Image 1 (cartoon, one colour):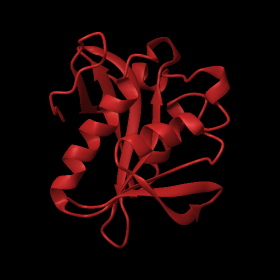
Image 2 (cartoon, rainbow, N blue to C red):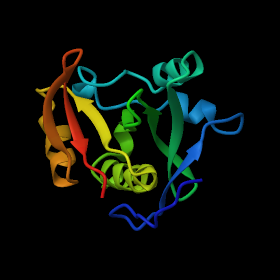
Image 3 (tube, rainbow, N blue to C red):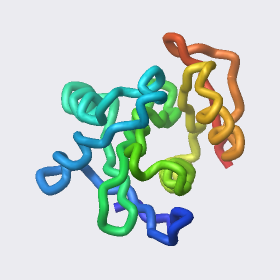
Image 4 (tube, helix red, strand yellow):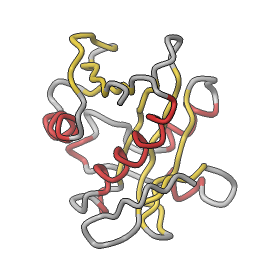
Length: 155
């Protein structure tokens, strides 16, 4: 479990946990709001399949106290940089600071390796751009497929 002491706005403790036999079903069922489906998968199940068939990505369940509320995955690039991808917070749980708490928790843990942390988002996803910028990510000018790459330098 990755626990940095983050809480959502309701006071629930946000932790990241491995996806396994006990929680894969509620993680797979995580779905974003309809207006976000242009930017993320319709269900977190797609990300679970991606991590199951890839040596790059590792899926984590996002918990608020003991309830699965989302999914996020991370990986290591050839240059040693850490990547965050596939973050989705369930539509019913949005607006409570869970995305912010998730990114802060994961970046705190990934930063221990001393490498840059990168992620990408679609240029039209202004909510993601605002969140990541507020957390210290800066656009690199690079593109990954049709998404802008942003980086949090090592501290």
